[in-house]
Length: 348
Image (tube, rainbow, N blue to C red):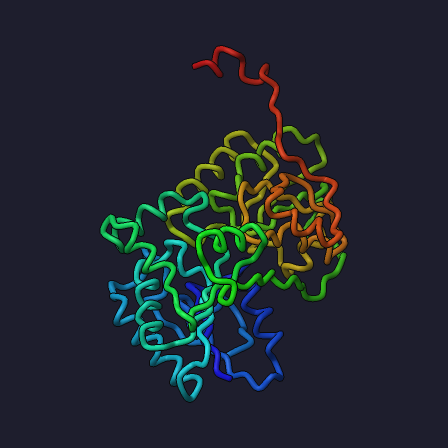
């Protein structure tokens, strides 16, 4: 079997880890795999991969149209696999990160290519800017055309979602049960150690494993750091890859610096240890995200023997509770005393 996996990049992050887990799971199963990506891996990668610049995020990609992008994808996959893919496994095609990819997939589907469209997140769910950009640039204002491009139908086009909520969304929208699959993310980490982090800092570490994009709600994480007592430090692991996310991220960094908060950003780049080792050094892992596709942040801490604290997302964690996973240190709301701001400022 020949499989072409498609994603915008292979930089460190949730989707990249899931692709790596997929490749590991298919090892030894007589399956040829190539990953088509717009940005090359940051380090060693466990499979064949081919760079297609047209798969990059919208702000960085060259001005290639859907037909040409489909041709490039087909050519690269054939060259790497020795023939056309039996399956195209495409991650997050409908998120609004690339205006040419949905049309390219429609082109491939029109030629009979078997597609598994693996949706981690929806532009319709909390990403209005992405949605309206697609509506304007791809569909010229037509929601019918938008649906045709984002959600092609056919017996050879299947969809995979990460949780019961999204399965219900697509099922209620008319997706047939024979082409809709619940495919929870595998959760796996490499070896980790409990040795101290390099350097003299002995403060308790509260670590937020995140790329710090808008939905990760970094302001609430900074609030944690502002009310913590002495002897505690806070850190995020990564910064945004998407250029459109950078201005808001830089704002939070400026605020943390101005208030002299005990927060370090992008600690994964400076800690001198692996991701797994970094998780193992934290007192607790933290999440303040307001929306998630699957919720790796709720599960990965347990693999290194650490609790997870922070904001609960019941639509996501309900799947975990049903499997007997206990998450007792989460909250659904975080009340801030009125006296901190004053009624006058709130009224204004």
